[in-house]
Amino acid sequence: MKFLFAWRYFKAKKSTNAINIISWVSVSAIILGTASLIVVLSVFNGLEQLVRSLYSSFYTDVRISPVSGKFMQVPYTRLLKLKQTDGILGYSLTIEDQALLQYNNNLQPVMLKGVDENYRNINGLSKNISKGDYLVGTPDRPAAILGSGIEYSLDIESDRAIAPMMVYLFRSGGINPADPESAVHSEAIVSSGAFRIQQDFDDHYVITNLGFMQRMLGIDSNQYGAIEIAVRGGSVSRELKSKLQDLFGKGFLVQTRDEQNQTLFGVMKMEKWVIYAVLTLILIVAAFNMVGALTMLVLEKKKDIQVLKAMGADNRFIQQIFLSEGILLGILGGGIGFGLAILLCWMQVHFKLVPLQGNFLIDYYPVKLIPGDFMLVGSTILIVVLLASWLPARKAALQPFELKS
Image (cartoon, rainbow, N blue to C red):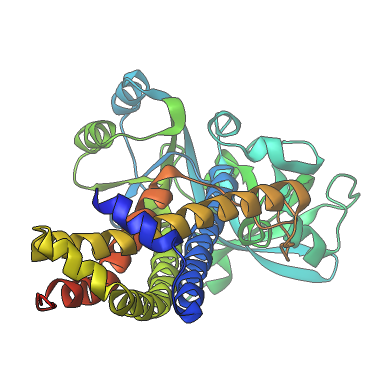
């Protein structure tokens, strides 16, 4: 009944044309605010999905590393239990450390990462080889897979270089003052290919053989820097993480992919909520038009209010009519805004309206519509229109009842 009154008041011709204009301005403001919120949140969802897909090609589902120190030593029996843990697809032993890579007269600081033969099976690096082959060699005859940015900096064709590169690495155990040069180990290494994933990895990482890294660092063959793990389905449950933590103990740090990149994903989420807050404030400011429209409507329908009260309507009923009017404006504006946002996102995917600058796998801003965003924005609109409608509705309800002859 209340919505029926609200609908009739909305579509009925007003004595003052300004009321119609302000009402449609209010609806238009809600449409633009709703569409902006959905589109912007969808862009952030798309960017987050893109970043996750890029990082999943390099970071594994779980990484176990020592809480203190650079290296760890785990008994074989514990590794066997790890392999038998339900949900674990496989694991790889790795070491990474800062190094210098030289080719001809070009010298480049890199993060040198030694991996075992299982590494290619637990992440997507082998699927992102842009030149040459995925080959890390042997401990005695190592090979290196260069990030494409490092390949460019060294001015080397990684898949057909004739001369080997030189790698310089500090040995573990510190520097002997009597023989400081012994702390730096240098050795020739050949390039087997290059990978291209994302600039952060392409400009810093070089992948090589685990045994070679152990020999260069002067550590035992049963010492390594981390255990990188792939899990079934790619999703790490709290139960699985707890099992791994219990298996390895307090001296080891068990991190999921998100926890390995906690700062990055934390900043992305914070940016998303800050933008949501800013656009919500704009929507609240736009809702002031609704206050004006409803206030003028109350004045327009003053006689109707007296008639309804004469027929027995109480103040609560009158207030709910004008609250329903505000909700109706919100539903109309929000519904059209949702439709407009879906259309814009569809056009972005199919026609690439807004290009994406930089070295990425795609050349346009990605978008991803999720139901949670529609629920969030819909709830926001409902709260905003209720707050904007309350004062005019209260004013209508408190009008004194007067009988005139």
